[in-house]
Image (tube, rainbow, N blue to C red; front, side, top):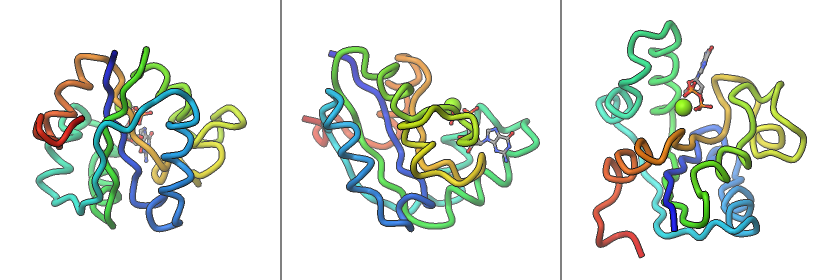
Length: 137
Ligand code: GDP
Ligand code: MG
């Protein structure tokens, strides 16, 4: 069984679609092994997205991620990382396939509803960033 990290971003939390997005996971073979709602600090967001620190959109991304609470979850299942990426759709919701989370719930590339780990190795690091092992079952 593989694990991946999902974040429901501030735009989707503000829209009131936490339940609808979690349902996409559970309806598509991803078990919610852990979940919690929290407000990221600026330091949290900068550390989480450190890989993008040199990108021109980094400051906008950090500002957006701390603009309201997020819901972080550990998803578990066969090929969980890729399955979650497929359910999410393309980074830019205008390019996301119909029926994906971003096509259905995201407005634009800044406010794009969800984050998902992009490799199994990154998933392990991202899960450890947010959860103690005893919080995951
Ligand atoms: P993801 O893995 O599909 O979330 O995409 P990336 O890892 O490439 O980028 C991380 C996040 O940064 C994306 O989800 C967007 O919120 C944001 N982002 C990526 N590319 C751009 C861009 O060109 N412009 C802006 N404003 N934000 C971007
Ligand atoms: Mg990414």
